[in-house]
Image: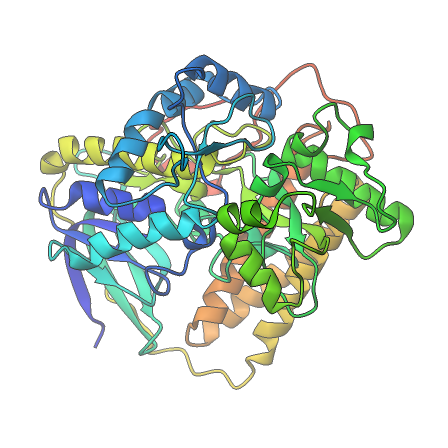
Length: 541
């Protein structure tokens, strides 16, 4: 029999956004937090660089906003930028109150601030080179110790549930089905409010810095229930991922370049000054394209990042985790250059929301990387992502707390019915299709695109979608099948968005339209069942 649960608020995702929301709502209502794996396994945990915020008196909110707008190549929404930047100091203060310990300067004892690409000031707070681990660890400890938060680890969302909204022709979200990966059972979670905090979709690419769980689950389930998505063509490729046959998704932090590391060709020649006045500190899209260009021009396997000119004591103080990890692969960054290649890193588009996290579907919110707030535009400014998580989770918590008592309890929803499906003896189909999606997305929808490549990718994804749908309809769901289904859905959204954009802007570069249009416009996709929803937000129309 299907297990069923009721909570006032169901939060799907346990990164910085999901855990911040859970902690801020705890005590005001019944909260459930679904974690795809353990609390300390998502993208936040793996983040190295830091969190951007204005805490230096010589810096300003206006400068931070300006840097964000410039990086976003004309597509940032000014209201979202100002809202996020203004919330920065309070976000940092809240994190510190939760036990996050940011690095301090040994002389002044003030927070040590570093600088990353696109920033005009040092404004990146960090915990050595493992900021994500410090934030995720502190929040996870708080969540685990709070009896008011019901944590469900190893639970993957399958789909959202909806019901007719009383006195209206529209639908509202009233919960979700989720797979308990430990038992294989699909559970029903009913709630007055559902919040998607599921992270991004970079696992749709063959090479990525993201952990395995970044399969676009929240974006896919929201789209299937009628929510618009926007700017899915803007996939940020981190310029420097470790190139080593035994390394899996290991990012080499941009903070190295912030502290003077140089990018070099195999022969030792520095090349970034030829591509941008800021050289290694240019925005990520420019650095990634420059590396891609040089690798293809030379037929090389990789380029190299060199920080050997810094003293050993400096490297050990600022980059202890990175140095230790590289040593496990036989690379001592104090004495050797680091081989690097670009890899998919961040999803700038997502589910359309307002500044309170509300989506087009009533009582459904989205926060963090799965959401499109308008903050990132065509390219995310480094270290704005963790800031966005905390600022928008805080805003969503306030809105939910204010609205919750007026939202009725959900009516009866059918338990999950698995009586007409069987266990598959052909899981090789899943692994084959998973591999195919990620390979053609890398080859055809990667750093440099053409219409011909995109059309090839579109043809392949349409065939695979039909195959996956047939498989999903006839066999019991599993983690791999759910992730494949969502990855294929997100791949289709990325391809469709890329075909719509007849220009090169930010992270989207096409050889067919290499110039940037004079008109800056979001790419908004509208699902066929959008008419069933109430238009809560209206960005970019």
